[in-house]
Image 1: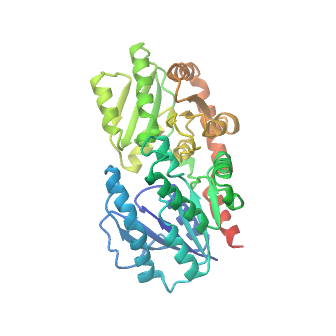
Image 2 (image 1 turned 180 degrees about the horizontal axis):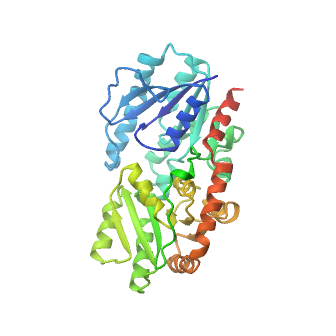
Image 3 (image 1 turned 135 degrees about the vertical axis):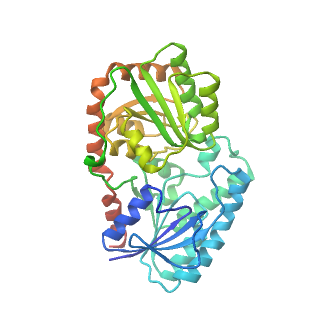
Length: 393
């Protein structure tokens, strides 16, 4: 059995995430799980907490959600010294076999390097975000700026510190090979995974006869192409097309924008809801007919949102509205056969695809079942645990 040390910029046992599923499954497999996690919750960060079979040391950090880019940058600078301090204080004498850390952030390089040297162990990077290129794609910084060049240096330093780099999809691997060829031999497939839940716990619902209910939920931020989605919803509303109804739920920098557009344009085919408790959200999701995944057309990096898994988990078909670089459309349309795709630079294509979906309501349950089957075969969290075990073995 392994002693695993997970480093998370943010982590909570109160939020259902792919990382919570992963650490719980590692503990259930008999491994000793140590977690070093940033938090803005009111917790005692002077002791080790024992939760769900895991040993957790918290690092108190300011809340980054919805704050300015400058404040986020300053918080990033806090991470390295604060994390190292807690390792020295609580975990320095602990035996560690493998260090596991995701991106974001990319500012863990020195923490990982120093911990690796001390523990004489390997490090595994779960590559969930390719920064700073994603920020440049969204015009948050210029590729010719000193800030971009600095973060590219930090990014390379992180890759160098890690023995294995787990990528979310095949397109991720190919992107990394092209743009970071020096680390090609460290790359492998490490898809997002979840703990598979029993379908008997889900509320059984049926497609409404009069409407098809679309949902987009989670973090409502700049990457999610919500301006494009709202343009599409408005176009359908202006045409008087009432068969499709959209629920947008969550919080983030674009939440107020969504709310204001629905109210100011009097969109009768959409509603905005603020973030719900997990149980309430899952009950709402059960009552929807199809889930939307959206990404901005400007992306040059192949993102692969984990929201895909929550839709597959509950047998919901998927409409992917994304850039043309991500291979999530290939998974949805060709491999899993669980939904539809339209590029996020084609407004008429979005409108036409929504109308097509509404003419094929009888197919939605079949597509949802296909997604659930694909999830079980490919995205079970047990697969992630086996990959980490193989690194050590």
